[in-house]
Amino acid sequence: MTANEPAGRPDRRRTGRWAALAATVVLAAAVTTPSAAAGTGQEADAQRICEIRTGVSHTDHTGRTFSTDLYCENAVADVFAGPQNYGTVIAKLATTLSWFVCWETGELHAGGNRIWYYTQGDRILNWPLRKGWGYVPAFSLWTTEDPFPGLPPCVPSLKEKAGPAGRS
Image (cartoon, rainbow, N blue to C red; front, side, top):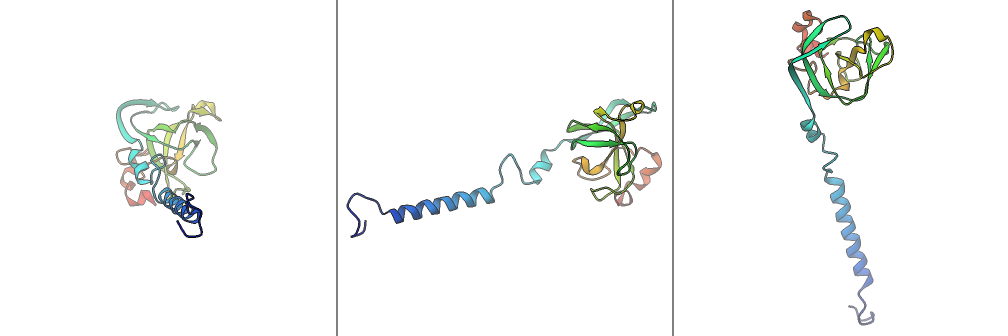
């Protein structure tokens, strides 16, 4: 209490300073501490589902059967007739956890590589005889590397190119 202040009343300037200090501390903590829901990116990647499964059975529209798949989180995405950008969209991945049976090299896409994953879309948009089977660019999947280790190439001769050449 100061000499100019009536008895029994707190110093408003001092209270205002404490409130400003407390607000600054709370704001600084909110800015520098990532929320548990958002994660820092590394936590989000660690929690993502992306694994090879064996003993599964998927048969595409041509009759080819696949017994291994990549079960992985993905973005809602277009499924293209071939591994190229701006091709015919034949289906849509409407779910964010899907399976992919093989990979192929194709056109360079927004993810910065040429890897495309072969799958069956959830919703058929064009070419119903294909039953939604087509390609999704690798950047639509939450993979740690492309092609994903353990997933076979769609064309067996690509197996030799799975290293750095396949990632270009």
